[in-house]
Length: 32
Image 1 (tube, one colour):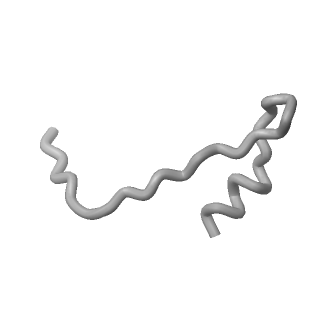
Image 2: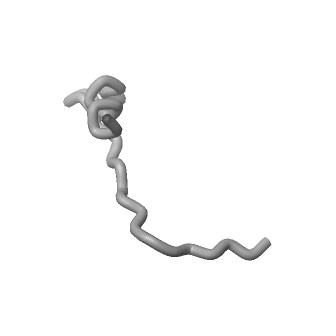
Image 3: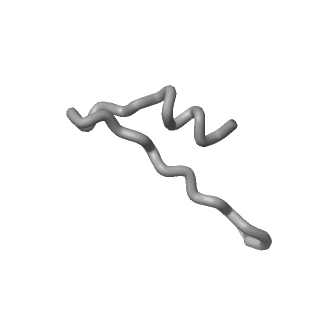
């Protein structure tokens, strides 16, 4: 397999609550 990596790939970070559980709403907000 040969993948041609070109362009910009922005990172999306996972958002967490203080108790380290995942904040799905805040993480999804970053994608919109």
